[in-house]
Image (cartoon, rainbow, N blue to C red; front, side, top):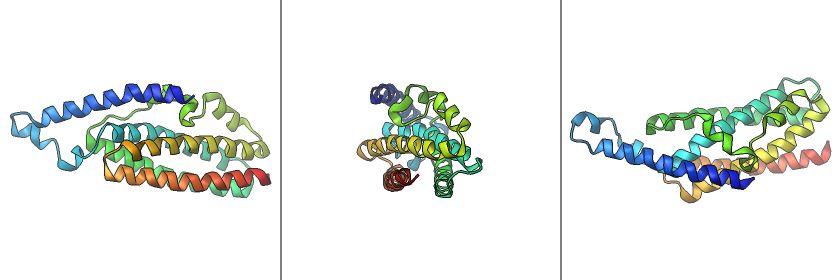
Length: 196
């Protein structure tokens, strides 16, 4: 499973590096107009930073979608509902922040790169998402926790890669927050699973 994520990363890193180099060559152009398009903060990122943001946006978006599925069900354990709301409230602003970075960096974002990630990054399959959506309240509580533990584990792996290889201070700060917050949430979810 992790192999598919690594394969995607091996494709994404050269692509991001190419985009970065292309941006640098534009900044070195002879016309004043081209140099005005590149600001100093925008240059303060590397391929690992752009890959982290590009891949974490749809990863977070799926967590928000999973949370919404549980929040709208009647009869779900209140502790699970509270956790789902907490995850949604934390991750949507992070999506917006990362999208802002990509805009500033001149890096296009879409979720096409997520197709090769599969479960290696903790992403749920279409079948997993359908199962959660169709589950009864009692089933949904346990299923959400089980799926979200896997999802968080994938996010932590991605964040640790950013901490090791990234350059942008804000991206690395977010990566550390993902590691800290989602590790704590995994502990809570594991405890809840034992009580349901």
